[in-house]
Length: 141
Image (cartoon, rainbow, N blue to C red; front, side):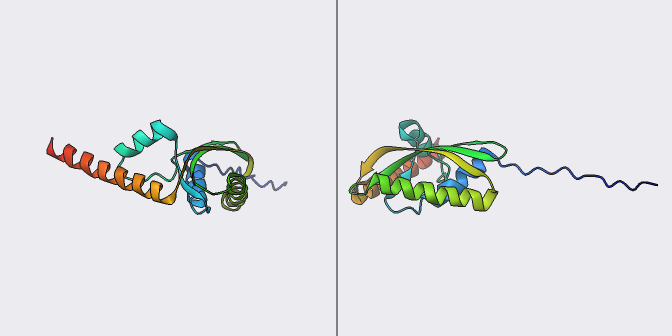
């Protein structure tokens, strides 16, 4: 009598949003990046949201074994964009491989704004104030 063992079929998959979140959390710690953002449309959506979205400005395409990324960022005035880009590539590639086992095969980083830290902080404060005002107006209606 022949003894056959059943083969276990196994497959680990990741939603695009999971990869985007990993990348967002990793890249926010790169020196010179003030924010990851998606420009005017994303900025408007962010103002209507009550939470900070770590996936904002990141678009991932996830396959069975590979990942491709498109990102938008605001960097600090005086920072070296090529150096920031290298750091983003290195950290992102390592994080994706370590956390998921997937290979990063493409990373496109679009710098959509350059601000001093002071300008960025002022802009962030204005957005917080606008969110607070919008939230108060929604409760009144």
